Length: 220
Ligand SMILES: NC(=O)c1ccc[n+]([C@@H]2O[C@H](COP(=O)([O-])OP(=O)(O)OC[C@H]3O[C@@H](n4cnc5c(N)ncnc54)[C@H](OP(=O)(O)O)[C@@H]3O)[C@@H](O)[C@H]2O)c1
Image (tube, rainbow, N blue to C red):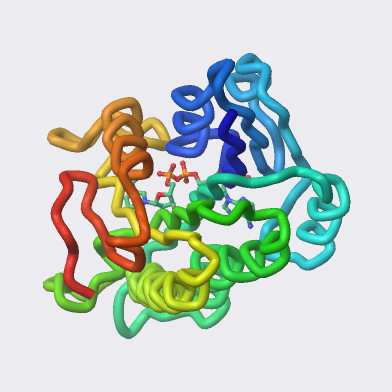
């Protein structure tokens, strides 16, 4: 039995992770602010009412799950708000930092004692957080927050190696979530299928790296 904690589980990629990982061999705890009929239909354990940017929610969750042993944490919840220079709004940047970069770090800290040795921490980042790959500059808040997530993930990989815990930063590709239908974008089904393959292969040899869903390493 593999135990998963998955954030942002009510829709998009998080819902698709829950759907594909839902089997008799896995136990899933699906975290969300509010559930959805699609998530409820899966029959997995849903913990709703959790805003990951507040300590109140995170401690409520920790108290509820104090005995839950986590094998794989999938930090998937995220927020993208469009901006471009000079139209930068501080509150928007901070909102994205809070959920994209800070909440995965705090959630990991709070649930550290629940993580099994040899566990895995999966941080769903974005290629837009790669400084090396940045060729058209807009989305300041989103890019900055995902870069910060990459830094947090790299540091966690160093700190948790001795416990046998591997960390991966994963870019899911451009995916048609939120009812988008961008030509050439991946379906959530395909993206998550490939991400799960990567998660299954992750080990301490390749901890602390930033992977594209297509299997390539992304430069920081
Ligand atoms: N789709 C893409 O093309 C793409 C590309 C690169 C990276 N990514 C990354 O992949 C992840 C999933 O993307 P997606 O397309 O599935 O996004 P999505 O459909 O917008 O879903 C985002 C999820 O995050 C949750 N969330 C946002 N703020 C939260 C908060 N404060 N507390 C708790 N949950 C919160 C949302 O919950 P609510 O329903 O309550 O808002 C929702 O479940 C994100 O980290 C995103 O940055 C996506």
